[in-house]
Length: 178
Image (cartoon, rainbow, N blue to C red; front, side):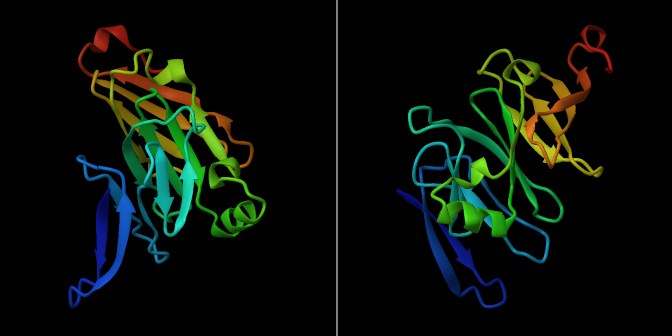
């Protein structure tokens, strides 16, 4: 088991120690909004910890390796990519998460939007990095295969995202804007 240490940067006093699975990529993210939300990998493969809450991507039988994490600018949404070739967006509505925990639901069930497995990557060997665009409800995805995607998610309904743009920077003649 490894740990992430959270320190007060004004005096370097240790505030929290958060146990995490081995994390050689150093994946963690701190929101830039006033909410100061910390996200890091959890104790189990495929688990993401938000503050002191947890959300799981996939079932207990389908643990995934998370490749990237990203907050939107107001820390309302968390996006992640995994070794399953997917991009997932989760709501970080803390009231909804608390209600879901009271009802024994994972926060991922509160809101979940996903790019279809085939639309981002047909092979799970390709790793992707996700970030939020400057436009509302837009995620940007770049893969190690040179492909760039711009996708829109529905913040009310969830479900599959709409691919708005796709380019291949390594072979531009093969891809076109949708």
